[in-house]
Length: 96
Image (cartoon, rainbow, N blue to C red):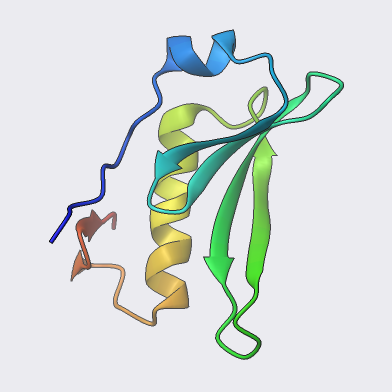
């Protein structure tokens, strides 16, 4: 079984991305770069009811730093899968 990599992006990589698109950090966290050059963090998940991919905005990179975006994505992941925030869930140890 292939393991999924977390924390693929670094602060330097985030600041250097200029082409529009989605850049995966792992665990559902993405850096979204728009055509105008603005950058934001999104959490991508699949809806339980419809099965469609959904995006949840976490904020601009100007207001949310990379480590904070990772923590936010972990909390959302644990809440979405209805796992306790304290302890182990999937491949993460959820923050308290």
